[in-house]
Amino acid sequence: MSSPAAQDLRAERKLVAVIAAVQLVNVLDFVMVMPMGPDFAVALHIDMSHLGAIGGAYTAAAAAAGLVGSTFLDRYDRRTALLWSMLGLALGTLAGGFAWDLPSLLVTRVVAGLFGGPATSIGMAIVSDCVPPERRGRAMGAVMGSFSLASIVGVPVGLELARQGGWRFPFLVIGALCAVVAVLARWVLPAMQGHVAKARENPVQLSQALGILLRRDYWLCYLMGTSAAMSAFLLIPNLSAYTQYNLGLPRPELGTLYLYGGLASLVTMVGTGRLVDRFGALGVTVASVVLFFGVLWSAFWSWTGAVGAVWVFVPFFVSNSARNVAFNATVTKVPTPHERARFMSAMSAVQHFSAAAGSFLSGAMIAERADHGLDGMQAVAVAAFAIGATLPLWLGLVERRLRAAGVAVGRSRSA
Image 1: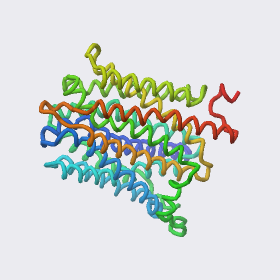
Image 2: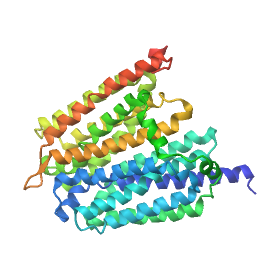
Image 3: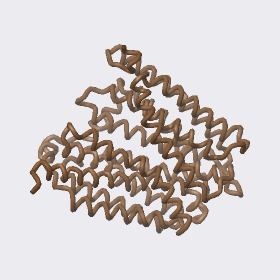
C-alpha cells in the first residue's frame, strides 16, 4: 500500500500533466492560425493583408481579458474558473471552423482570446498553489515545455491537417481537444477555494491592475517588451504567405519550416539562458539584433534564392528566441518580490497589446498582388528593424539601473 506522501506526489504529477495539457492546446490554438493563414484567406476570399488583423484580434483580446480578469478571477474556485475558460476557448475555436468571411472569423478569434488569455494565468496559479516550492521549478518547466512542443510538433501537424482535410479541420480538431482537456481538468483537479475568502474581502479594482502600467520605474521594461513583441509580430502573421507566394516555398514544405524553426527556438532558449547567466543580457541582445538584421536583409531586401527559405527563416526564429530570453531574464530582476506577480501580468499585457499593434500595422502597410504575393514587405521589414534595434538601448539602461542598485547582471561583470 502506498504511503500518503507517494499518493500526494502522484496526485501532484497528474495535476502538472493536466495543466501542461491546458497550456499545450491553448498555445496551439494561437500559433496554428497564422501559419495556415493563406489557406483560409484563399478559401474565404480574404485579402492577405488582413492576416495580421486576424492574429492581432486574438492577442488584443487576450491582453484585455488578462487585465480585467485579474480583478475578479481570484474570487472563484480555480478549477471552476479553468473549466469555463477552456470551454469558452473550445467554443471560440470550434466556431472558427464554421467562419464564412473575415468579420465572422475575427469574432471567433476575439472569443478565443478572451477565454484563452485567462486560461494561461489560471493554470500557472494552480501550479503555484498546489506544488511545494522545492518542486515548483520542475513543475513550471514541464508546463512551459508545452509552449515549445506546440511550436515544434503542433504547428507542422496543424498545417498537414489543413493540407489533407481543408483549413477548417485544424480548428475543429483543436476546439475538440480544448473541450476534452476542460473535462479532464474538471475530473482530475481538486477544488481550490482557499484563496477565495481573502480575495473577496480585498477585491482588486481595475484601477489597481492598470496602476502598475503607469509606474515610471517600470517604463523601460515596458519599452523592452514593446520593442521585442512589436518588431516580431510585424512579420510573423505574414511569414507563411510571404514564403509561399513571394519566395516560392511549396505548400507541402511549410510544415518543415516551422518544425525546424521550433527546434531551433528550443535549442536557442537553453543555450541563451546560459550565456545570459554568464555574460549578461546586453551582449546577447546585441548579437540577436545583428542576426535579426541579417535575416531581414536576406529575406526582404536582397533575396536571390541562392539558399532555401528554411535557411533564412530558421535564424529568424533563433534571433527572436534569443532576445526574448535575454530581456525576460533582465526584467524579472527589476520588481520587488511583493510586486513581481502583478508586474509580470502587466508585462504580459504590454507584450500582447504590442503584438496586436504590430499585426494590425503590418496589415496596413502591405497589399496583396494578383498572384497572392505581398507588396510592401520591405517597408514592414524596415519598421521591424527600426523598432527591434531599440531593444539594446532600453536593456542597457535597465542594466545600468540594476548595477546602481547592486543587482548582478552577469557573472563575468559582477565578479
